Amino acid sequence: MLVFILAFCSCLVSSQAADLPSYIPKCSLTDPKLNDCIRDNANKAIPMIAKGDIFFGLPNLSPVSFREAPLKATNLLIILTDTYSDAFKDLKITRILFDLPKRKLEMSGSFDRVEVTAKNYRVESGEFIGVKAQGQGKFNMTLLKATIDFKADLRIYEKEGENYIDMVNRVVTTDLEHAYYDFENLKSADNDDMNAYIAKHWKEFRIQMKPVFDVYIRQLLSYPTGVILTKVPLNKLFLP
Image (tube, rainbow, N blue to C red):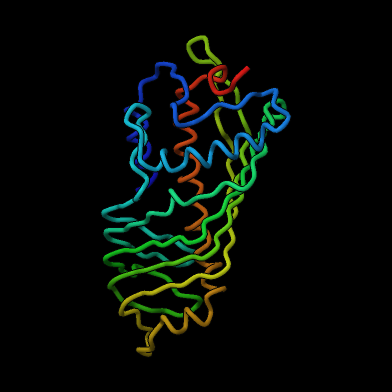
């Protein structure tokens, strides 16, 4: 669902070359502290990007909400209805490595807290850490001290006489200090409360849920940056 909505919005963006929006300060490629400059300016821009940008076709990411979203974990499928998260605006970039000659981009960031809620969840299939369970009701996932490492290769291509940057081979890894999950009315086959079981084995459940969070974060980080890069040519991304 997230991919569909973001792809639809990107189709609305004009192909005409543009300059960086005023809320993203430019850095100089000759600055010996280029990486620090990009990091600091990214942190300044995130709260503005989170509000959306009609000109660039960026939707409001504060909050992100979906009428229905599949949660595809390892050996588990849950359908979430009326899902809501307002975490993007709180992202803090802690490290940037931008190496244009080597065509490499690395970024590290963190969230103090990421909360995802849904008015209803429904278990479609699978198991919770090896235990079959069924239920539906309200859902809450709260992640504390989440860290992110994002890596991508940079591809330079020409469009309408201008050089642009594209991010390819994107990889995201995440970690966190603690995770809390609350599935209303989730019961095992023996009618046991599964929330207590998940709380006891939260690290194992975190591993099961990790692919979901990693994909979500990769899309959330890649989309705003990718849209801007497709519209702003290389010679307008940086100061001389």
